[in-house]
Amino acid sequence: MKKYLFFALIALAIMSCRDTDQSVESLIVKETAKFDMTKYPENLQKVFAAHGGLDTWNKMQSLTFALPSKNGDEVHTIDLKTRKTLIQTSKYDLGFDGERLWIKQDSVFFQPSQAEFVYNLMFYFYAMPFVLADDGIIYKDAQPLEMNGTRYPGIQISYEAGIGNSFNDEYILYYNPATYKMEWLGYTVTYGREERSDRLSYINYNKWQEINGFLLPEELTWYTVENGKPTIPRGPARKCSKVDVDGSTMDDAIYVKPESGIYVKKD
Image 1: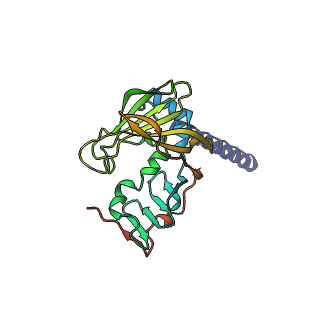
Image 2: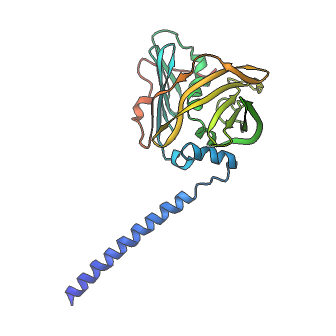
Image 3: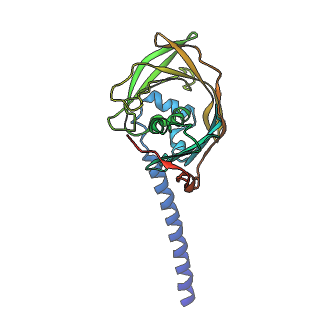
């Protein structure tokens, strides 16, 4: 009798474990289903999908990329959840530890007063279109951009008051009507000023590369602007290299101010 009871208890335990596993799996499915895409315009949802999917992007933890600059490669490392940032060049290192900006340099090559408004600017340009899913964004249809016989529909992005350091900045994403891949970005930069700007700059996203299932920029080309529209390249394309987007986090210590660095104080 005791033997039968023993085996019955084992069977019950096994069934219980199976039920628990199924319950956990069910919870994971339900949690995934909670991701609300309906807060984004339908055309923007299609742009996210064309570039690898927003739900998949949200599982990533870190992003690294390098851009050429007059100081050699400018290497950016970003924690995608906290937006902690490290920018490394041959002349200076600039970082954001989640609360304060810091800079390390041997001389005043980089003006600390610029840090607050530019430390994450290239991250925003590079992490398009996924950064356009941030909280506090207002979406509107924009006038299409006509270039070389193609009419690119536009999505205007503005920010609620108090979101970020430069909430008066605006972006316009232009996508290919056939593929929904992003091809142009129009943007204004206010550097924290109270008034909005109506002066648009333009970047052409003409080359993409597949990194871990995502389409991320391979080149960024800035354009000269006449009568509010891009005309010709302003210079050679900035080629993106050393790109990695990963589901694991970087060592948090890299974002901490080194002993030889100084905190950047807000005015």
